[in-house]
Image (cartoon, rainbow, N blue to C red; front, side, top):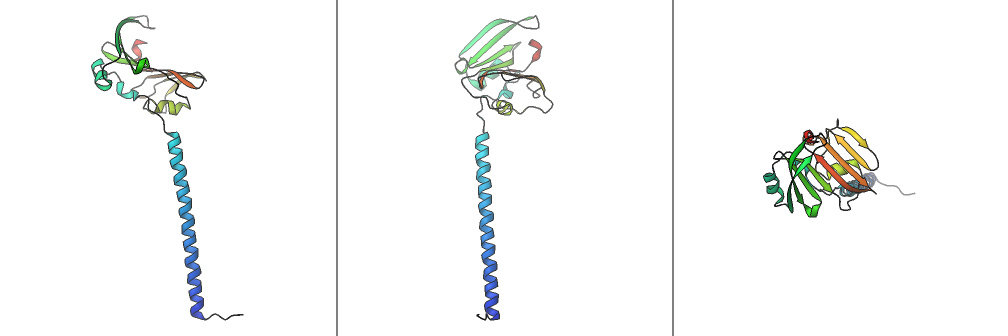
Length: 182
């Protein structure tokens, strides 16, 4: 058996300690890189395509709408027979090849309607995000089924959100800004 002198023993212990420290550092770094990579992948997977920032259309005028989106593809005045039994002079502004309509009554946008074009429905939260908002925690779910979602008191600016989902695709979304007309 070999005898190791005191100096060699201390050098050997220092070397072993440094080697363990380096190995531990590399292991921690590798784990944190893996966690960060996984987090980045999850963030990308949960990114949602913004269809429209629905909150910015809250009770704006037709002129303000045109300043946001440009001239509409069509602008149709008509008489709106409301479910509340009254008739109102209304104007519908149409954009995006007919996929987006804005209903104006009494000079204000009161409803935004989106007609889907094949966008897949994943879950309610992603659906809300695709229209630029996060709902209040105390919102009231009126209808929740495989084919429809209707929610009241969604945000301060959105009193009603109504979505029709067919075959896991968004078919129609109606965002109401003023319930007095409905």
